[in-house]
View 1: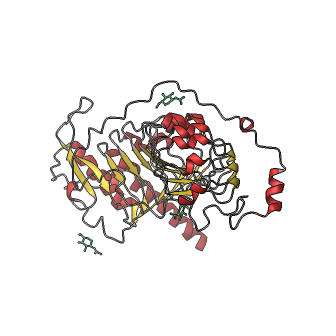
View 2: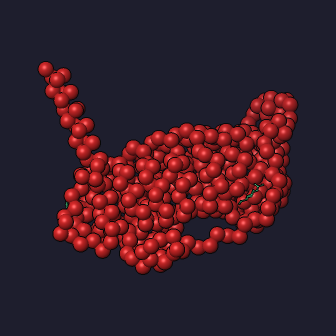
View 3: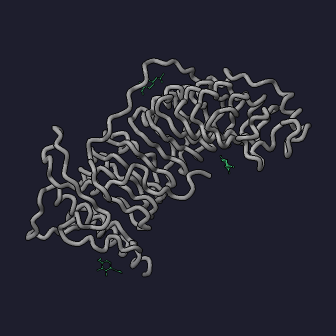
Amino acid sequence: MRMVVFVVAVVAAVVWLAGAGGEAAVVVDPAWKFPSLRMRDAYVALQTWKQTAIFSDPGNLTGDWVGPSVCAYTGVFCAPLPDDSSSSGGGELAVAGIDLNHGDIAGYLPPELGKLTDLALLHLNSNRFCGVVPTSLRRLRRLHELDLSNNRLVGAFPSAVVLALPSLRFLDLRYNEFEGAVPSELFDKNLDAIFLNHNRLRFSLPDNFGNSPASVIVLADNDFGGCLPASLGNMSATLNELILINNGINSCVPPEIGMLREVTVFDVSFNKLAGEIPPEVKGMRKLEQLDFAHNRLTGAVPEAVCDLPRLKNFTISYNFLTGEPPSCARVVPADGGDRRNCLPNRPAQRTPQQCAAFYALPPVDCSAFQCKPFVRSSPPLPPPPPPAYPGPLPPVYPVPYASPPPPPLYR
Ligand SMILES: *[C@@H]1O[C@H](CO)[C@@H](O)[C@H](O)[C@H]1NC(C)=O
Ligand SMILES: *[C@@H]1O[C@H](CO)[C@@H](O)[C@H](O)[C@H]1NC(C)=O
Ligand SMILES: *[C@@H]1O[C@H](CO)[C@@H](O)[C@H](O)[C@H]1NC(C)=O
């Protein structure tokens, strides 16, 4: 008997959900005058989200999502459409941004969000959105910033959305549960920032990694494996921060990293990097933080590295290094920044037995990793032009990266 009641309840729930998925779920009062069809679509999208896909909103952010004036909704921002040839409706008001960062909202992202075709910014960081990223988001042709970080999103990397968005520049998916591979095409896209750390992704850095014009790439804790790509050398004019902590990278350090003359933060700690630190690192003239800790590096630290003018923090602990020039005292943190190596006359080193056993092994042959060499094919591209849309909109469009990051960036 109880079983029958349960089955009936499940069937009823499925029927209700099927109804809720359709547009019929949101009633649009025929008396309302929307300034345009796009505003009516926006109303349907936002109300479908609120009425069928948001289950908890402790800050009551969607409490005022009532009635046809969607531009007055908390977290929803409107702007005039740009006059561009690809769009009719230049100058018309459209929903250009949604910012519900730190909303703690629980629910999911309904496919109807694809109706917000004029959206330039979607900031949903630090909420409790679960489920998958709806494929319909690929219709957001103007989307410039997508920040879904620190939610409970699952499924494969949302390639069908991310690779299809022509205007996307800022992609932040960190602190979710995306799993599987990341398509190499991601690094061919004209993205300025890529944050994927703290997911369940698993792939090797592809050889076209260096095609990415991004200034910030954070891929920590995803267990990638493979080579530290020599194609990094192609990022010399654009790369500012690269964080590849704990990605299982298993190769030597390519001398091409010395071509990264704009890099300020370079962190490849907790990998399996082998061989010596290439002296070419001295070409990284703007470097402020360099972290090689927890690898299998050997030999002596090249003196020129510690002499880099802006270097403040150079961490080399947990390697098998055998030499540290005196000038390194300025940049290697005194509280153990060089511990657990094979450095003579330094505290907290590995035992002589450990060092002897390691150095009794055959020396590392970097070519054995079969990493693809870097051959410069074309001169670096000029920096991309600034976005034409959304234009100056004070509270609406925070400066890129203004949204406070979710929990600590790495570790
Ligand atoms: C939520 O916000 C709406 C509109 O601002 C308000 O009418 C309502 O009382 C609020 N609810 C709670 C629980 O604060
Ligand atoms: C360098 O990057 C550009 C795109 O930014 C790409 O066209 C070119 O093929 C890349 N070259 C190599 C050798 O990776
Ligand atoms: C140096 O950087 C490491 C991480 O790369 C950090 O743990 C450490 O606290 C930093 N030390 C100083 C003195 O800034």
